[in-house]
Image (cartoon, rainbow, N blue to C red; front, side):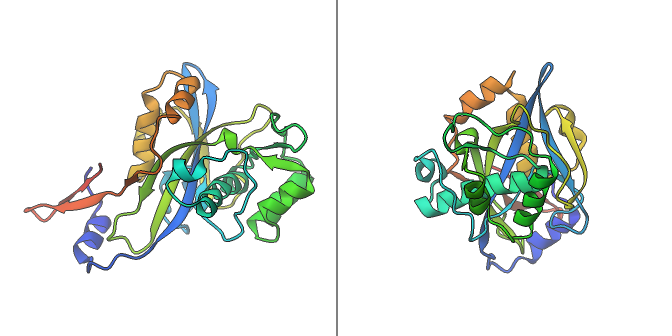
Length: 257
């Protein structure tokens, strides 16, 4: 993959001491749409990290991301100890709620169900409180007698930012289906555009390599059922970290494997 000029310069200037990679999570939200499905993407505002490019809802793990989970195999699936694995899962659910207004949760006494519409004024007040760190997701779920539906998060991949970048993330990518009675909304203030789009039609949008590769992966499946089935065989613990190969003509190529 060719390198933008600014990225190439950072690679050339790299002094060999990589910055630490902050744990993060992102969620690829899907909804049925003929002939296959659509993906929810947002364009980061120019004031944000990675501004001007399209991405999925997501962000860094917070110390308060300590959810009670349904599934017990997260350490094995994500390749980190239990506390860290649950924090990553919690961050994925929290960021999806903060940035898209979508809540993956169900009643404690009926965890097989998923909550319905969460766009009302009372829900929006809670979403804003979570976003401002005035309320944790754990507190929100407990107060509303809800349980995180982490069984609706399907791990797909793990990408680490190249060593030459000054800000680096260790990011787990999850796939999730839009709950039937909910809608994704542009609520975070961190995006200047959001849209539902097919993986194929997203080829013309400006994206970072992990986003592009993720969409290329999904485009291989004929429907959501195939994506969910494929997630069971994905190794979301294996790290994908692009590196740069500098060329004799002064350019460079980003290698991904």
